[in-house]
Length: 155
Image (cartoon, rainbow, N blue to C red; front, side):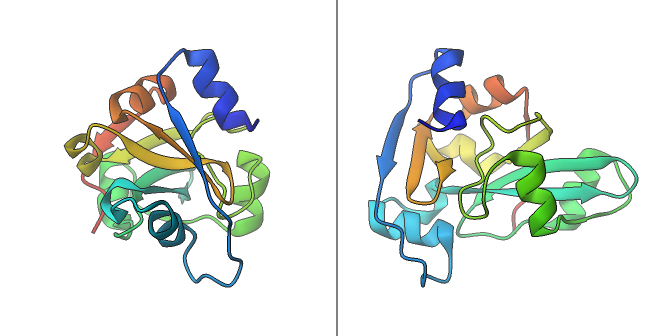
């Protein structure tokens, strides 16, 4: 059981886990999850860690079919500029490996923004804390557990 699944259980929210055989040669962790689970890529969300210039790290949760709009993300956070965090910083701060970074159960809870498109679906999927494992839950539950906000941060 991963820290993400433990966090969801502890929060008492309804969720389902979905597992699949991860292929290390696949070019995209998120699109691989959508393909192998037969879930529309718009409903599968990736977790990205971003550095806010002068303010530390933050988390963006966006559909795997989209990219993070760094300018929009910075505007939502009310900072001048953001940049993608380096892989070693992501892994050290979250406790997860790339491709398995979950917004749930991170070592230290970071400011988190979820793309507004998540509200279009009854449930979304995010990584459950390891490659080949997704957790499906309502976006509202994810927001509540993470004390997160929604914003238009994908392009």
